Length: 104
Image (tube, rainbow, N blue to C red; front, side, top):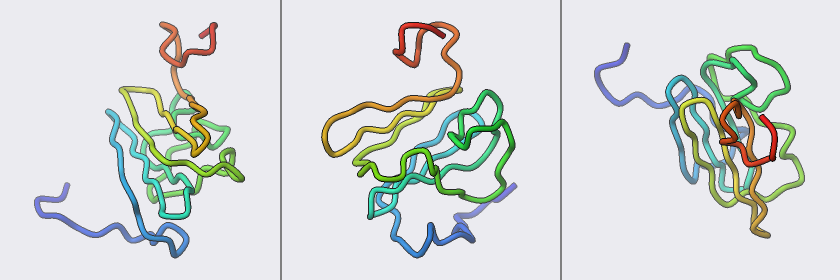
């Protein structure tokens, strides 16, 4: 538990952070180069690393490599990214259709 603002130990691969978003148990950071980083609880794939492992420090979301992301957001168990060309990417829990893929 931290009672005062504390800088993250990871430098997002040497890039400056552009924005952050926080869900119930996970967070996303958008780097200035358009890369997305995530950390926190990995249940249901909400971190985007292809597994359900928790990450204690920011880890780059490699599934978005090659995409220039302009914005990120989170919900309780979901994560979203919008690319420079306007494509929306989503991942995490979609049991109620929250991900927008037409299935879970």
